[in-house]
Amino acid sequence: MGMPTVSRITIVSIRRPAERTINQELQWLGSSLGLFGERDRNRSCFRVFIELLKSARLQKPLSSDELADMLGLTRGTVVHHLHHLTGAGIVIREQNKYLLRVDTLSELVDEVEKDVLRTLHGLRDVANQIDTKLR
Picture 1: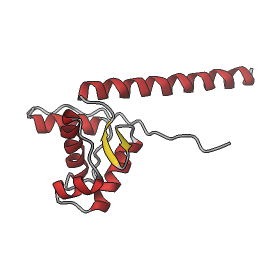
Picture 2: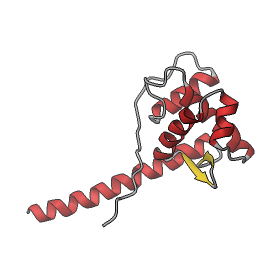
Picture 3: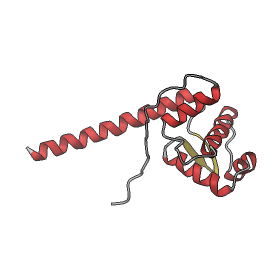
């Protein structure tokens, strides 16, 4: 049997910022989705996410080199964050270019919700099977 496809779905309950600038709301949304952690001190993952959000609106996928040039980051740093965002199911890769899985943030939340529900249904099915075997 091959390795299962792994996607990490993280939801973090974080108090919404009192001051609600667009930047703070975006940071809060991404942090609530487990995209940006404490280790992202220079907010490079956040910056990669924002550029991908902009490119999604234009429907223009970006390469890791393009992102690195735009953001003044090393390609290695960008690739690291792209792998994290891809593993979270937020970003997809097509022909060596990256783009958000959907065009808008509300669609993104809808897709994450579907992923969570699909995962929970799978867990429930296995739990029921185990319960049946333990009886």
